Amino acid sequence: MAWMSSLLSWLRSQYGLLAAFLGLTLGPALGLVWLGWRLLDQDRALEHQRIEERREHAAEEVVTALQGALQKSEIDLGQLRAPMPEDDALIVEFQPSGVRVLPKGSLLFHPQAPVLREVPSSVYREAETCEFQQQDYGKAVSALQTLTGSPDNSIRAGAYLRIARNQRKAGLYDQALRVYTELATYGQAAVTGFPAELVARRARCALFAQLSRRSDLVREAAELYALLRDGHWQLSQSAFDVFAEEAAAWSGTDRDAEVGAVALAEAVAWLSETGQHSASESGRTCILRQGRPITLLWTRRSEGLRALVAGPSYLQTRWLNPLAPVADRLRVRIALKEMNPGAAAATERLSSATGLPWTVLVADKDVQADMREFAGRRNLMLGVFALLAVVIAAGSYSVARAIAHEFAVMRLQSDFVSAVSHEFRTPLTSLRQLSEVLNSNRPFEETRRRNYYQVLDRATRRLQKLVEGLLDFGRMESHAMVYRKRELDAGDLVASLVDEFQRESTDSGCQIEMKAADDIPSIYADPEALGNAVWNLLDNAVKYSPDCRTIGVEVEPEGAGLAIRVRDCGVGIPAAERRKILRKFVRGTAAQTLGIKGTGIGLAMVKHIVDAHGGALRLESVPGTGSTFTIWLPARG
Image (cartoon, rainbow, N blue to C red):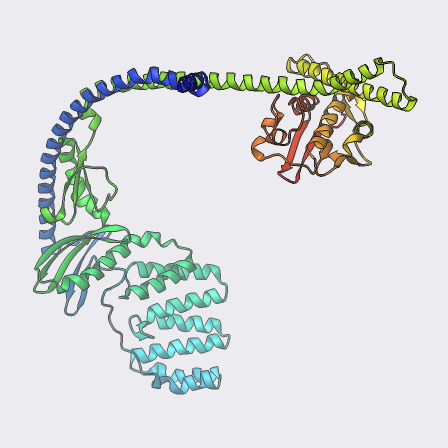
């Protein structure tokens, strides 16, 4: 029968009562939910089957429409009908003579940049000897001037570049700028492996930057960046990136706008490496470049490989937007997996099965509209389930809170009665024992008799403080406490309290060190109530400092008032308990662990008193190091 007694005891606890309540309410509720869910599941399966069949039919129609649109684009490609300049697309044709691009200038960089003829360095040996070995820039310029009359444009361009470089070294910046302007007129002539115009414009930007001519630098760099964006020069990708990065930095231009054009150029480079070596005469594919899907349609002709390279904007406008009437009629949404990698679950048509360059996704446009009848029943049942869940949850929460509160109140009341009884027992025991001794009519020495009377006086005072403290706390809790405030000097009040406390706690061996500033402002307060608050803090500091017997008290100005600090070097207060210990009847774990006496209302009384005076009670504590309680009160006026 022991197990039966244990079960009954557990059921009487708060957890047992809560478990019994949940057991009685959740059983029927779960049964109702299970039956309703079975009904909803059957309706859902039928409705989903119908929707899936309709979606399959729509996917076939969409694929057919896309096949027709691509075939039309392939016809346009064969007839070399180029996209518009503002379109996110271009046509590229790989010919033996080079790469042909339509619209012209729509390719940022070329997969096969032309190799420009370089002038042998021996042509400039005399000038470079003067420049680098002798550092005679004027003589170097004179030697180079003779080369500017050469019939070879590349030699003249190289001479102008070196003349400007020597003039920069000589500090002739304006002359160097004019020479760079002259060099820019040589267009595609090779200088250091790049077109002379590009080298000249870049050099002018660098010189403007060196001279801190900001407005000229921004203007020149913007022109350079615009020419790069327009594909003015046939550059490799690495060369384009270097020049474009410099020009954008100088002009303060955001390069994000060129992402689409860069993606197209990278796709052309991929086609140059892959498509030209393919054995197939035509093809379709979609590749990812710069995080953007690029569609490629190509065909091999006698002139070479010709391809349409289209970005996502062209794809949407040319091939997907015309399908809007079909999508509206079939009540579906059409998407491509390459453009929407995170698209919701839908009917798929893989590119390997359809011959399209993309994987087609067809989803319902409005699932709720298709399943309106099912949604009505489902929403009704879900509403009932939700209401039932709310009722159960609210009831369970209320019962749990009520049980927890009642048990907490019972525990606090029991602890309070036990603590108060213990606090009263000590002075009552002393009174009883001394009363019996004094009533025994035995002769005592005057000194011993006086000591007995002093002990009786201290015990009586302690009882009086306990009773008055309980009565005052009761008045504070009922908001019936009357505070008799007047103007007073907090330093004198605290000093007298410290002296009195020191005299009454001589047995504790505690030493109180007080520091009071000279410029303490006066306050408007009830001296008895404020003294009671400080006394409680001192009493706690002594109780919770078993190993360190020095208590610090400080009174000093702070802000628009003054601060009274009581600092101990005791056990400290954990962070989790710092709010709780200011509530009535609550005592920290240190009190239970160390067996420290107390009623649990001292700090609550201190907070009541401080709040009533318009002040604030602050606590700073480090477990194992000590605590500091600060009473802040506003100054008089």
